[in-house]
Image 1 (tube, rainbow, N blue to C red):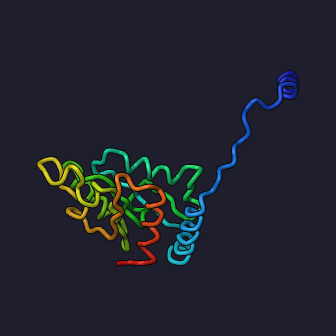
Image 2 (tube, rainbow, N blue to C red; image 1 turned 45 degrees about the vertical axis):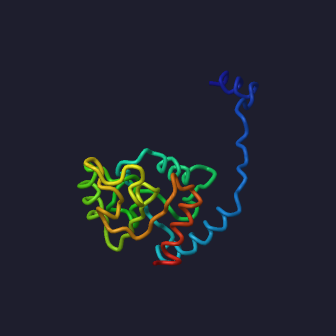
Length: 172
């Protein structure tokens, strides 16, 4: 054991230092506003359940980017949960495929009230390229009630943050 400690001491640190990540001012500003709303209305914690109803995964990549070290939305009180029973918001992407229709309805019913539904991406908002067909129900609003639509193909993480903020600051 002493030989191992000696080797560690002689070798030193071989990994790179953790780089500092520059913060984007717009993300900081919108995040601070969102955190103030979450602290006031949700006691500091907003839980989101993301549902892929048949998307191409472009929107999922942008949603996942919200959790990386650059955006780090958990510092604003936003976190993603594994069950709709623990969620305040359903974030639904993609045109709703016929195979996902029943699952999306069950997920909606399993989410406790009050709940909000956000349709993300052009496919979730209007059906996108797929529209309504034998395999697709089209937009999310064709299957469950939608409170907010965030268009884009895919929307950026900053668009998603602004969309979350507009859901509570400027409700329509």
